[in-house]
Amino acid sequence: MLVREEFNRERIDNLIREANRHGSFHALSHEEREATRHAFLSNIVKDDGLWVFGYGSLLWNPAFHFTEWQPARLFGFRRRFCLQASIGRGSPEKPGLMLALDHGGSCKGRAFHIAPEKIDSETDILWMREMVSGAYNARHIHIQLPDRKVKGLTFVINRSHPRYVSNIGMEETVQLLASGEGHLGTCRDYLNNTIAHLDEMNVQDRYLHEIQQKMRKLDHQNDIA
Image 1 (cartoon, helix red, strand yellow):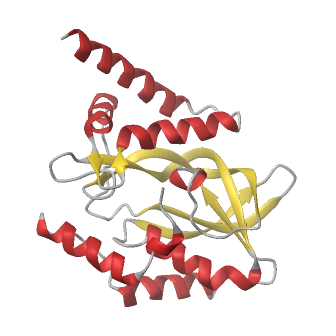
Image 2 (cartoon, one colour):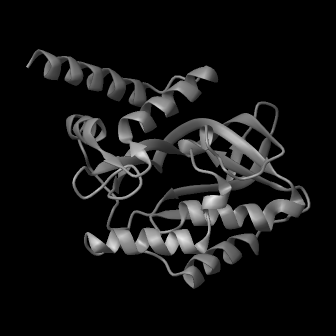
């Protein structure tokens, strides 16, 4: 579990240095990252706070302060394993994949509400969590809550980023998730945690469940072998 105290500039610098020891790692400078945050915040009305849409690890480990969460749906984007992971839940020896929001379809998750007076501090945490490498773009979006639609923030894949995987088959996805592991843990745990928390919300994601079933089949085959 990540805690908010771990999201600081010193830790980010250490992560980038470690990643660069194993090859070139594309990362934003602190100044570049902050510029994207301020650009996003300059275009929102803060009086009502800020809703943040979570679809992956934010479901169980947001690490930022929020006043409430609600089940939510985002149209125009879908959850997909399309981001190569060489740090975090992957490594040069055991590369993996991470979820991102890619174009098309819709996605169910959770919307977290940040109080107006906490927007600056909590988006600082969010940007250090999500925008280290520039693999995501911060997007202004409309989020469908159970009783209304609200404006908010989410992070979608940056299709021009070198770690974006545009076309990967199911079998390769399963293989990478079955073996991917880094200092934050395994891709397998990441997948299972995401599914478990969606199941708690009675959200069925056929894509994720198909991956999980194929991974169990692979495990069974390996046990027999």
